Image 1 (cartoon, one colour):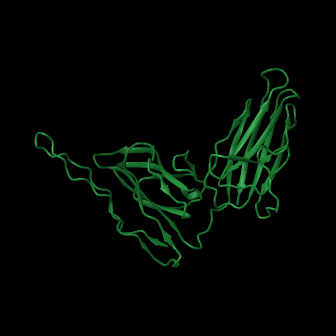
Image 2 (cartoon, one colour; image 1 turned 180 degrees about the horizontal axis):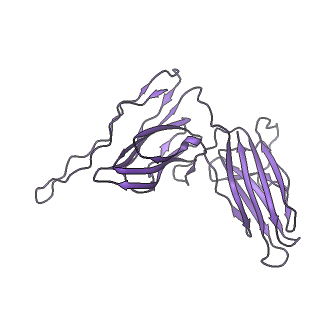
Image 3 (cartoon, one colour; image 1 turned 60 degrees about the horizontal axis):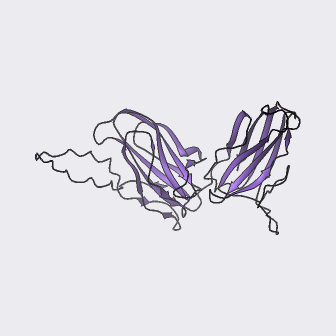
Length: 301
């Protein structure tokens, strides 16, 4: 375990003078943890530089400052709270690129609800960059009060991966047009997925079709199709279909991923730290009557 005591708080500038000679009152410093001490870890343990990502925050926000975690597998997050009846949700979000779109990490510890006092927690990280989000903030904050947050990336041999998790790639809903689900990021720990497509209704013409895909990305920019579920007819019956992604047997031949896989095909060795669902709905019958109700979830190990 790390002993996260004795960390130095950021320096508060000296009071400035106004033209009338009065001094401007400066906010109080957040609590002063002192220097980081590594206790009881193997000699291979590594620690990055602590980074203050938020200081005296009193409104909901995603930190402008990002912390690089490309050489580490976890972050230690310290939250310092000062105010009257404060409460907030603190979550760690990840992205493959510093300036990209940050999404919630799947680790159970990545989101801390109803934080009302100083606290600290650790989050396994599989993405190259992380930011911290403050949400649901409430309370009364005076000058120099609010939520201050410091993040320290670190690596320790023997750190276990995230526990198995259920990822929602597309929540159940009736859909009438093409779309893409919200990408799930921070999946660098994962080694295997079981992905389930659950179609509960197709209320349209027989000639209409639904194609559901699951894509993965190495960098959050280029997406590669890993799963193409069997095409659903517009008047098809409700059904469930699953596919497995497992790179443990990647084969010895190069695989062309320039275009999507054929209907019903899986590229099981295709893997990446980000995943999303995508769907294409074709209206070949009566115009405007296409509708399919379905969901896509993945069990990640």
